[in-house]
Image (cartoon, rainbow, N blue to C red):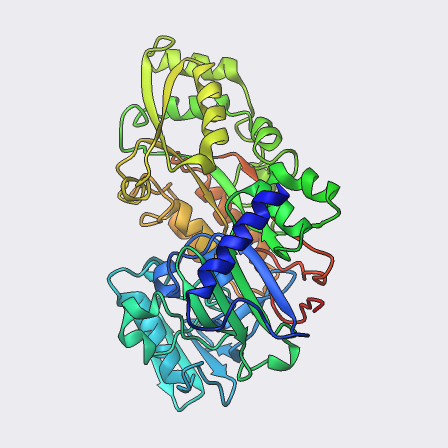
Length: 501
């Protein structure tokens, strides 16, 4: 493993010698974080949008808000915000003197330009998240006034790292260039980017909180496989990396720090109720009762995750205890339901279409559990899976989400009529729209917020389009040179983080 890691490093060094830019090593005494990671395909937050790439983009971009250890919205580029009495308008007050790394001012006009681009750009991955925003007005340099289509107190959560990493409007005039050459106002500035190889960044002296950024340089390097990550950290090739659950024990045995970062992650079996045989509710219920969630926890997360029957981990504020274990594992009941639906054992042949190796183990579990109750499931890997999935052309698939800072956003993404994670669009469960509107309209500090939020979850779970399976924390591994990571749900905050030179 060590030889493989050193070979990877040698190849990277040889590649760097042919590139102009920041060079392959930092100056003596500099604090450098070497992160082994899957590099983003997109560096424009408007296009990137989904998955966990926003964590990497947070190096180069700052967001309007962020969240604290309890998942509450706190200031970032916006130092404060306030709603009107009705709750259908919110004004964000920016910090004075903000600038992008290209020297352009980060003012109210820049935030307005970003949000409007996110709503209208043809390839935006964020337009569906911004339906509550009717218009954006810049009042002077520092006040961003957002008029809403409805009362929505989720906006400070919504406009966090995933949705509102603000880009330079000058750079955004060429979106294709911006997508491969980020220009933001984050804690670091990209100095060299070679797609598929590496990205180098240096501390941004103009970042609004630069005094609390203690890392001089970040090197993002492509990690070939999970085993190489562990050996690479042990030999000093890397300092920090994402880690699969299967490698936790190896990392601990190597004397590395394994970090279980809290998150909003949840995985599911996605069903299209607009396509046979799932037009029959009894077939959907058969899938529900055939699902043994503990097997996913044991074999996919190696025991580090938890079973969940909702789009949140069980300890999350939006998790509805009243709905817990509504469809317990009961294979006999699943067999009876299939028989009642008119299907003999093995008669119901279906393709389970997945994206690739990420879902290999989970798909085999689904195949085994469903076949055990009378389905005949064939796994099909489609390298272009996202196209038929998001076009709602599949009947049966798997999906995992990293969640959102806004729990209402997570609910509408899964259960709403236009939800990107709702394979059964435009279907939504009866009563969901009303329940989610109440949750959205409840101030975050209201004593009724948790109750109304959980009621919206309960209404969403009436959906026949999703069967949730398991949740697991975000797992990272770091060398002892890297200081403790603040347990922010789903995010990595660079403020205060230190790396010994």
